Image 1 (cartoon, one colour):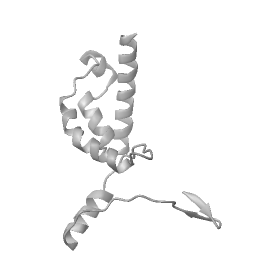
Image 2 (tube, one colour):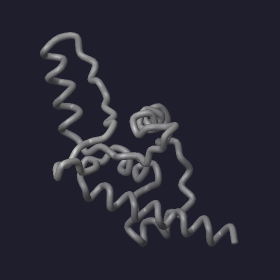
Image 3 (cartoon, one colour):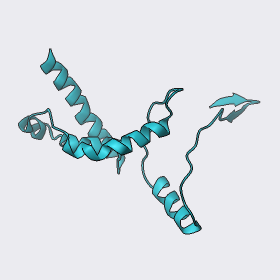
Image 4 (cartoon, one colour):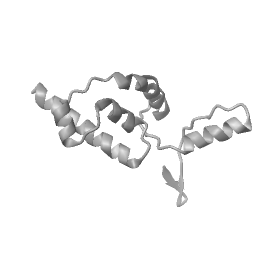
Length: 118
């Protein structure tokens, strides 16, 4: 976003087309897209946010099989969700609380693994 003639403008915006063959499908696609929280992935010149999102979509089903590095007693004592659930919540949140819950859990994972490695 930049300013030109005291008006905000988008310079070289990127967009994603919704696949739909008729008006009913288009309405459903818009409702599905607009009715959820969408994570924004940090993009760079070579890799835009939409491509990162598609890659996440491809690997996210395997998150259900993720091995949880936190011991169950520690996780339950702190009230953290299991790792597979946290990964799903951070990438496909239903509410803003899901995002915060997942972030808290993943921060603990990072700190725990770092401490164990040292």
